[in-house]
Image 1 (cartoon, rainbow, N blue to C red):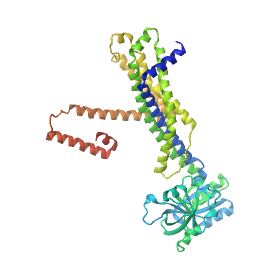
Image 2 (image 1 turned 135 degrees about the vertical axis):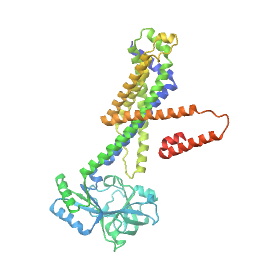
Image 3 (image 1 turned 45 degrees about the horizontal axis):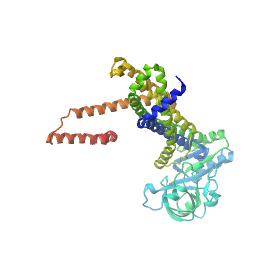
Length: 495
């Protein structure tokens, strides 16, 4: 067979398929869109938590304590600095603040008291307004620096004044501050994971209530190299055993473990969407090919072998997957932006928007492979059509051989999709568990709905309303409501 025949026949068949071809493309596109968009969001979260970890940690070492550190405790850090174990340190006080005493928790923000001369010990923050601003130059005379989110939340601007009611995280006291906004910092670097915050100097913070002692809940430390970091971390842990001492390497390891679980969850959710899309591909291609039984019989009678039909129909599935993959990967860019914004609203973190060409290009390949995997069953069934059965209009799918072939193809389909899941998740155990766990769940769900349909089918159809019938209806509603309370998803479907 000429190569042009493959292309011409395939494209003509897909165009003749009309809405069914569009539905198949839609099934692929939705699955690809889901998995690519969630992979992109997972990659963004990974970058937010693991890039520039030293700045996100506040320094090479971050010391936090529920029992506040007194000014006299800072002598220990001065000694470490004099010995050359550390190069710098800065203490901070963090607490919750609002613009009114009765503000709701959703309207509160973080107030952080810092030493303008030493904060931060990492790269200085970038200012949005003024562009040449510095912490040391702005934090004085009851002046504060905020981020853009706080400006938007309270509809303020640089130069505005406001009254702030603040309490420390350690619960040692509360102060009322009359401050003026003089700068807006960007949520990058040391503030990459901060949201809705305000910076004020220690001097102004204490001046609001001179009787309130400065009690620090965090100290951030910088060192010359890893050896000094390990040495300083051990010394700090020995001196303050109840404090939480975290190095940048430890923070990276902790963040990476959390991000890996988040990415796995997002990828598994995308795989489930891809699986559902794959089921749609199977059904759609079965309809497409079953409507061409006479055409397939004619091809076989004119000399086309089964292998030729595999190639023809495989090329159709491949084109559907390719087009669906391109559409889905393109749509995933916009969906990932929406999902990323939703995650930022639910969790108080800043996630930089970024795109990974490898993930987007991989989405097109996933669409192609998915269409071929789930198209395998209808393709083989169509290629096994016997011309004689078509002429006599005999069903060909109820023979024992056809039944075993279908079972074998379903097993092969599950194995191939499992292999695809293993590649996507990059983990054999996760891949097998996700795919076959989903199959078991769908089988149980199908069994439950089959039982529901069976029970409904055996119920008599009442000719008129009766007390017994009404009691049965109310009992069903009560059971559905109880199920909705325990399992909202399934209860909602029954209701």
